[in-house]
Image (tube, rainbow, N blue to C red; front, side):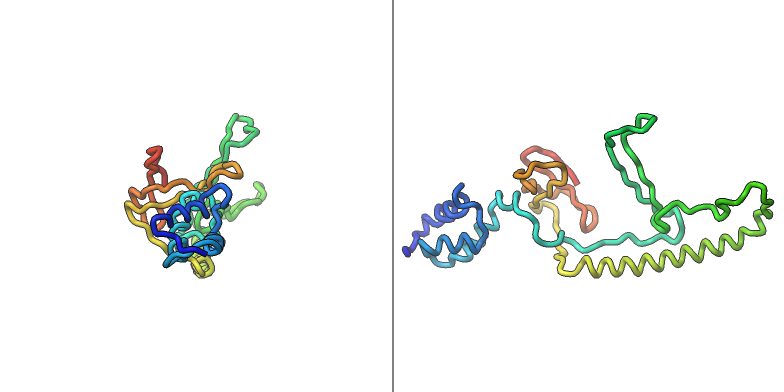
Length: 221
């Protein structure tokens, strides 16, 4: 085992990590291979810093931990149709009879569905009482169900947050920080899993960031 001069440390790290025959191994494997041939002061720290700064590893490695940031639940409303979730789905392969290729789904946050009329399924031959005779009862029932739904949602959200935030790093990024953006669209097997580094140009809350890729000039949330 020989002592590697300081001027050749960068070349040695590149050879044992970045070379096509080295395979971009992690810290332990790269350190073991170098230790079998060379030595220099603070070798482990040098290997750790070099592997952590490798752009190819950052773009292609699989994330083995939870996504950063704690769960931020939406506070449940006090009545129906105060908060509505909207989701888009498509394009579908087979269009509808009207030629539509996309589906929009609207869901009420409180009941998770559109509330039904209390008289669904009643035969049209049955005479219904005037509206003012049953409206107070229906209104009391509606308020009771809304209060129970809100209470149950808050309990469920508390359990979700406790389970999700366990062993989760709550990292907060700031403007001008450099980050990698995960590729969520279709990609080939050997394509990069992460794009970047991108720069944060705007923040919206604690978990939403507007980033810009300086190579392409593209901005995205």
